[in-house]
Image 1 (spheres, rainbow, N blue to C red):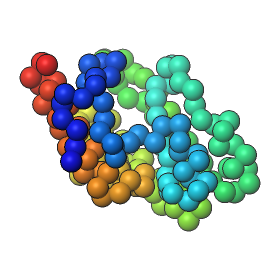
Image 2 (image 1 turned 180 degrees about the horizontal axis):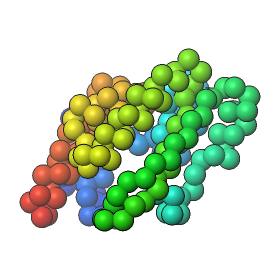
Image 3 (image 1 turned 30 degrees about the vertical axis):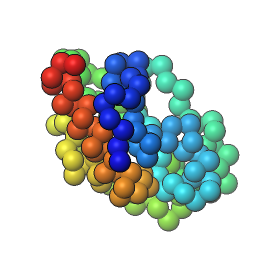
Image 4 (image 1 turned 60 degrees about the horizontal axis):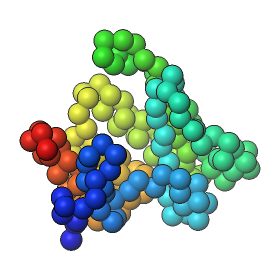
Length: 151
């Protein structure tokens, strides 16, 4: 059962994710090396300060244990063009996930609203179980309702 809305709040005042809801942040590389995660994804505005994982993944990319793809594209955000860097890492043999995940993310940027199908597909591409994806979707819907209600 998912945690209720009475659970602790994060720094934005939103309920913290219940157990079983990602993200795999700071654990992606270890999970990939253990063969438990087929794809990792990182994306942010290029002007934003972000601790990108390139250095940690680099030796494994060089050794062929992990495949890396990087994309940059422009999006209009708040009326101004912004460059976005998207970084994908996949296990060998799982490279097909990169193109599907990138198309999924570009759809989200264009529509500015991630559909349930997009979220489900991305979760599966990243290696989350059906149960984890369902828990995330329920949690995300609760957050959206809470935001619409202004609480």
